[in-house]
Image 1 (spheres, rainbow, N blue to C red):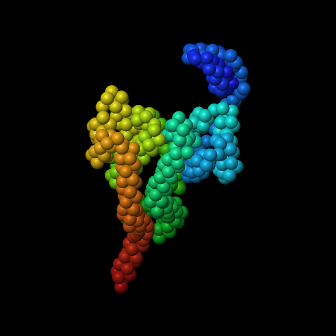
Image 2 (image 1 turned 45 degrees about the vertical axis):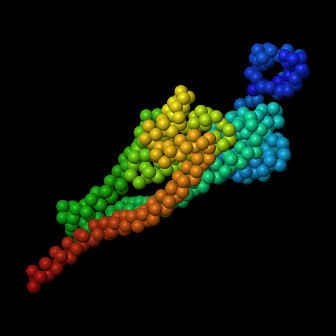
Image 3 (image 1 turned 180 degrees about the vertical axis):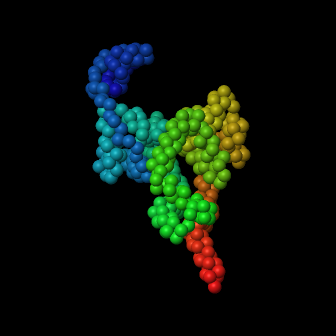
Amino acid sequence: MPIFSYTFKDAVGSIQKGTADAESEELLRKRFEEQGFTITELTMIKARSPKVRSPGKVRLADLSVWCRQFSTMVDAGVSLVRCLDVLGNQTQNKRLKKIIADLGGRVEAGESLSRAMQRHPKAFSSLFIGLIKAGEVGGVLEESLQRLSHFLEKDVELRRKVKSALTYPVLVSVMAGGITLFLVYWFIPQWAAILTDLGLKAEDLPAPTKFLIDLSNILVYKGWIVAVSIIILIVAHKLFVSTRFGRRVMDRVKLKVPVFGKLHHKIAMARFSRTMGTLLTSGVPILQAMETVAGTVGNTIMSDAILEARARIREGDRIGDPLEESKLFPPMVVHMIGVGEESGSLDFMLQKIADFYENEVEAALAALTAALEPIMIVGLGFIVGFIVISMFLPLVKVISSLSSGAADDK
């Protein structure tokens, strides 16, 4: 967007100078005239910027470190342009380096930091931009950056705990799948050939052995059908989830599925409370804060409940009432929100709720990991044991027939 340097007289005759951005000179003149200003000079100082392609997403850990360093430099009195220049040279993330360079150029040209960040929606979420804008308006950008850094650090820590807890089950599942595939695809066909050489017909084999041989034949001779079917299912699932109806169905399933549903709900509650508390602490109006939170909670069912509560609040209702009616927010959360609303410390209460649910998530992950370890080991042992026993059952039958034949000869 072009940037103009202006000089005008206000209603009391004082001369004002500055810069502003607008789509065109005519629109800017009209804007000033509607406000009662008399323009004496209006000059374009920067033409429309070419559309810059955003480098893409940036890891939350890198953004968190950048915010912490940024807030320290701003608090020390360093100018925004200088901060961005120094941080851009120091960062090792190539994507973030390009984004910071673009931010520095736009801020130097007269754009606000929050407006420059809007050019990179993949890197900066609506929460991120909202907090920066609130800091700019209130003149407390360094505090907003500190809160944002703290929020990102908490979010990164929560994600890391979830990934760490799921690493062991995933590794065991991959190992079990790999062992099973190796035995069924490579070993079973050779074993079936040996059984055929021993004179055993398909109808003479035990049911578990016949099942394994049939499964092996499907994978060996019709494996492409299995692969195509899996690909079709994956693509169909992605297409289904990409629709609003499909996303709602999957998000509802996430909340209802045994064990993991409660964990998903606690993670969503922690994210809701932390995000809402951070926005309110930074001075963001509650209606805007709830709109932002609805897009960051990570579940469309809960997002719809939050937006419904936002509409009710606009009509004059209390915050807790619509949240309680949604049946998605526990009584403890509704009660603490109500107390915070009455006492004027809603942001503090939300931070306490976030701390509680983050601890709950940590405890649930620890219990889930402890329970999954023996289950996964037993499951892996059962699969391998079933394959081994199924392969040796025919030998038992052969040995028994040989022994009975030898006894008859005697």
